[in-house]
Image 1 (tube, rainbow, N blue to C red):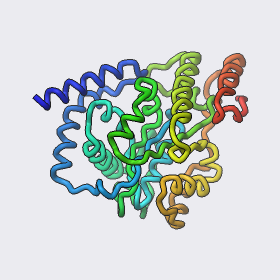
Image 2: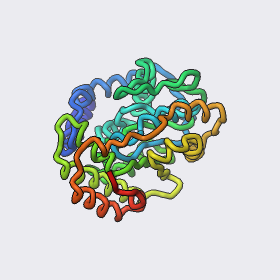
Image 3: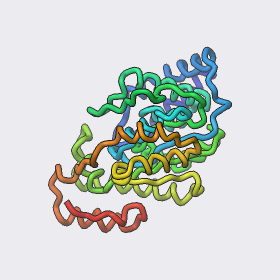
Length: 298
């Protein structure tokens, strides 16, 4: 009966997700197996859960450099950041702290074993600690855009996460130029939205993230732009590592920062922008302190 109850909770959580603009059907179908798998892993492996000091989560927007930042942090010897697990989905489905942690560790090993390639980019760094760890002090998941969708659907999800993981939270908010984010959304989604729909979808995420920023403690929130991360990767990476309260080893910082791209992609130039749409994005951005300083030109 307990198993049936859990399956029922998962189905309920998945139906809650119907409002998301993109569903992961494969993840939905596989969730009951993930529940069983995570139970088995916890019973057969001795994970270092008692050593974990903080839980890290990415907040933001799709195609903002989350995969790069997550992979660089995962290369630190005391940090594990899984790629695209969507931990909040499992939290909403009733998975326990230990189950979520085991899925994070498993996902990280699998992604590393497959070469850490994603959307045509190679995120593997030879000689560092991706897919493994020395002392597990920070654990987390990289699902920036997905996390924002969960925030829209369940505004209290962070409090539920805080209660479940029983650890201090570390939230990383990565911002990219709004025109680039919106253009990528318009071009890359399987069901391409109109430009106005892409703009509206983007600002729904922005509003959810701004609300969360106003509700969490200052030491729980770290904000950076995709552009500054690329322009001064060593400095920004050191700031992130210190935010997670782990040691900023110099050899790690230099090796990880060397993986960063030379310049950000100007996705905004790949679609047509009516001037009134640019003006609209500029005007709506002025409401948010983390967007208002961008220059709105194509």
